[in-house]
Image (cartoon, rainbow, N blue to C red; front, side, top):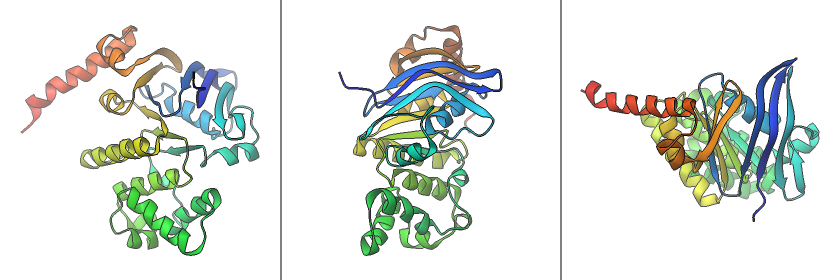
Length: 270
């Protein structure tokens, strides 16, 4: 049996003596797509930040979130910042809800992409310049040469998110964490970004941890789903099983609410 690429064991997040996330247990295999779903405040994003080693002070992770790397397993909870910096970008990368969280407003787009390409893939000179343009093209960013010269305030929200995806993929990670990557985008732009993520994950053979409050989107993007409520794990199931035969009353309520919304849409359409 293949070892998991990422393994949570009783992963939790505390604020002083208060548990915000409690005892999450999950394995993600190489190439597997797993979703985390729950309402606002359920602990989805805190779980992602714990895996990335990016919890802000005074939040504190406990338990284990172990990533299998070419140099051996690394636990995000106990690893030093220096050790985790070698993992983040090259093994695990992230796309967040708001691309401004990962993009520098004072640096041109091309320079931002050049750093991980040089640092993780060793590109230099003309190969680096070509790599920047290829990364933008792969993310379906139109006019890549113009965008590479632009600052992020000079491009649209959809283009920023595509640049953020290109930046996350620049180090050729094995696992991509996508935390509400389309919530801040227009509906028409959302579909294109989801198509892009699906294509890149498939073509690169990556694992995906996709976090959202939107059940239909999670159903589209993932093979298996973890449900969180109030920081507690409710259930984990294959996506098809979770939608057709949810085991927990909370999950059933999520599924029924999603179906009710779908039933209303034809009635309100022009």
